[in-house]
Length: 166
Image (cartoon, rainbow, N blue to C red):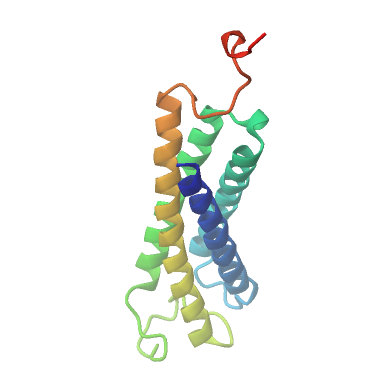
């Protein structure tokens, strides 16, 4: 079970890194202030995800800082905000062919930089990575909730006095 958690946390790290990089590039090349609220919310969800991922990794490797309630809250918030960000970004982008953006509204989220097709593809990739990140967070939330219900018994603690052979 620890192997599954490790893989999920590493995948979360990968997905949040890719999503943050892509959305950061889209925001950096945003010239016409198109889709600012959506992009800023996605970046907020990424920042919250970074906190959850880094705490989860630290908790996994350093058992002294492991608090199941903190992990439960962080993973729960990450699941919620990642789901909302993925839905909003997918709704704003829609099913689009990025090489043919003709006929779209001037306020379309893919417009706003000198390379609209590149921006569109970056937003598409970010949407996919957000959904992968959401799935990984759901997996870790399941394990954290299971541990929390068990009373945090998966957290490595010092042995009881009855376990010490004196």
